[in-house]
Length: 349
Image (cartoon, rainbow, N blue to C red; front, side):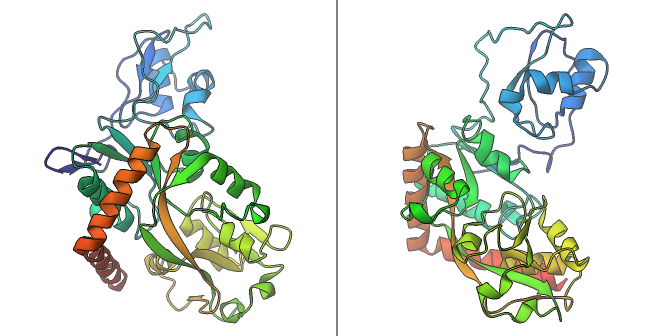
């Protein structure tokens, strides 16, 4: 969603707007991606068929590894019929993603923190939006949902398609000898805001399996742990739960982790306890799944920004200033309290 001068929010995705197809478009031209576009529809408009691969192959640097995720505002080159490519002329801006001065990217499915189905698109989304309003009142911004967490840090932020992504945890960059390759990459390439919220990362197991009663991390050796793709695993590594010692399953969604758990293909789901409780409730698994009360880690959630982005230093300052204002005024507590009450009500319905 984006903030206008009066802080009125609208979504840039399909929450309030119906799907749009690509406008009539010729091959051998440049095309700026619009809300609702897919590569198949773009290919059909340009070539008369839905063979999206010719467009994807010609624009992998902009699109990234997932052809199902294309960012609003990027400019694609549509190959000519003879196989040649149109030039990037006319001042095409390949990183424009919205109309705001600053663009944030997050993803659905991380309830109660980020999801378009929730009030204000989730607790963390609400905190970020209000921090911008308080810390940078003259700066317009967009918040866009791209449902591929890994793509946020692998392609979208490095290419400056977006300025920042949330929510993320910051690895222990001061203890480099203990970091995994992924954590080292994060420390070398990203900077982070102050903590906006702290979560309790815990473990969920099938009731009666015994895993819900384990009291030592060392007793998880040999277990099958499910953690959705794109979710940080640093706290698992810190507890000695390395891939050599456990089987780490990383499907694309929280719900899939619980499906693997219930089918006996996973022993544990490693997840923030509030997100896990919400998933258990939404999937009707109360009584069948239990949270382990002994094993957990406290994880501060932050906004991540790529070091190469020239906006990073100012944006971090604006966000931290806004957060400080919210904490001092009590607005932060009110937002969190309201969001958690909404979650409790939703779980009881």
